[in-house]
Length: 418
Image 1 (cartoon, rainbow, N blue to C red):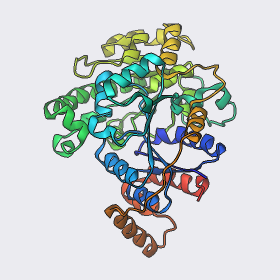
Image 2: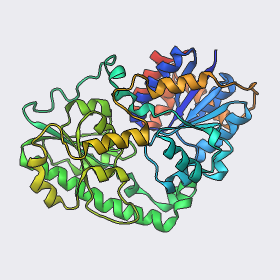
Image 3: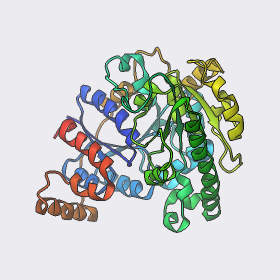
Image 4: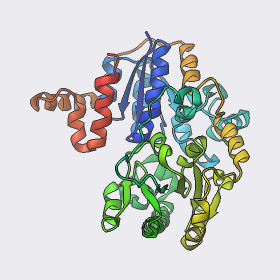
């Protein structure tokens, strides 16, 4: 049986749709493991010898090193675009000439025009670009959704007689420090001056979002959820809202759960809004610090955009009045189809298309090549034995935190084919 190792970064929201992809791959006869990017991935390649490795990108230092190693071992590398939307400039950063040699296939979403754009700006061979859709949106297809039980969150924390607004932050660049990121390939391309300006602009925007949350709570008319981006520091927001009652501050809720209770999503330029469109949840963009360095993504053209907090608060009751916002609904559906190949009435998911495609690909003979990181794995494994732990993730989790531990345990205990 063919084996697939899915490797991804520490983002809780990716785990849900990757588990769905895993199920389709298993139905097709693959053996599948999901792992966070760490020393263990090198060990899996060395010992388990997968036929495919799926990565969400290879423009980060650690991913490039891992892709190089896996390719030397005779493994095919597939890049699965996890970020949904890419501008032309961001495509150049994601698919750099020094990274492309390690890509066998990139799995993208959208129509033929999107393929042409990716080919033009990535310098990838067109045969390597497969427009199969994004598993990230599969969970919102009725043919998938009807077979899933998605629990409603915050059952005892929100007032069901009130409508619920979710403020989505996505301001992790506010904490960027050049000295800490200067060795990262992506930030090297952006440059020190722009990195510092990113931090300044996002800091100003973040402050406006925090104040908006406090002001909406003061109105007392809504349930207010402040949802952080998975890469943001939750402790910062907990401190900011320490003296604010009746607000839920969370970075663990999955989008599919959020959309069961949210009547409105407020964001700056978050792809979470695109997911909300698939569930007919209203979205608006709040851009209190307009600038050319970090412009809004193109999809905000199909939303109402507010540039001041006062203007947003003035019209807020009117915005919350109706369940479904008719504002440019047709344009939104067209955008989802053109950019992501998402059609709500579709009878086949992106996950199924990906599984079908990988089943047709010939695999290479494997080589056993040792990597120094495997030594680190065995050191951690020795610590695991000394500490009487069953899994190595329990040791790594002391550094990575409780959420890492929870998801990893769920994957190890219940989902592995070993």
